[in-house]
Length: 314
Ligand code: FO1
Image 1: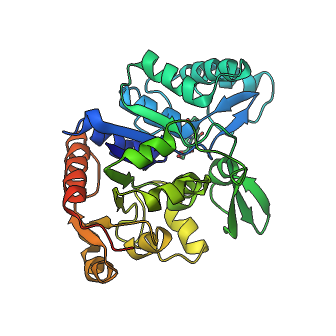
Image 2: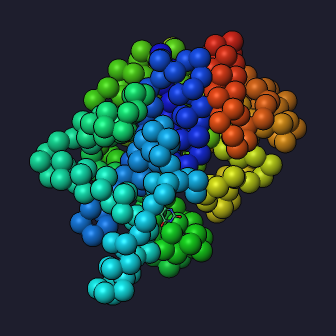
């Protein structure tokens, strides 16, 4: 079994590749829920939705929300009711949030709701929220502490990041199936997602990091940093602010003690020796997933590399 840890936009491209790879029957994905928050009383779970819509072939080309989306509800909220709609919620997307929120109010768990939504959207891959408990990434800045979505979208990443708190994680539990999947996995893949706000929160849930350390699985990360930057999102900026080197070395530092191998882009080949000297297996390849063929090829390559990599001595 192949377990993958993933966030939103970058992670979902890799997950989409896995879904068309030779190993698709064998994949479980644990998804970050610390980006989740409420707008107008509705519970929004961006990373779950991004992965779900991507796998269902319904994602908008911007990487989030439905394709062929309309924004009539939001226009009325803005124009008639004077609401500040800084977080864009399309009409079709709103249907997901209304449906999910309604089920949460009936005490149905996020795990069950995700399974239900996946069934309805025809997604067969097993997607598990990291936890059914509320965990939220809060960003400490010189101007105050903001929820990640406020930092990212409302304030357009304009603040220096001083610290990140995965609020609620100390008392949270992994959702049902997560620890069993970690224990059963032969390969654990860390998708090319933001380490600080996508994978970090997953690893902060008590039991998950310890489970990965204990597992016999080969643990492989795909670097989201390519040539000193990211394809999309705030990871490079946040890493710089947090004094983490913006390179595959910084990624290896962040996942210190967890990895057996790392996948880096051709443009970062110069880091290969240094990473190998740390005892990591290194695959240098094209990691830019700008077509479905490239997503599938990368996923196949990463799984085959993982199968060959030597487990690092503890
Ligand atoms: N990202 C934006 O840049 N602007 C938005 O208005 C926005 C709305 C949105 C609505 C639903 C959803 O599921 C995702 C949405 N995103 C938006 C993406 C999201 O904020 C982030 O990309 C993820 O949280 C990071 O993985």
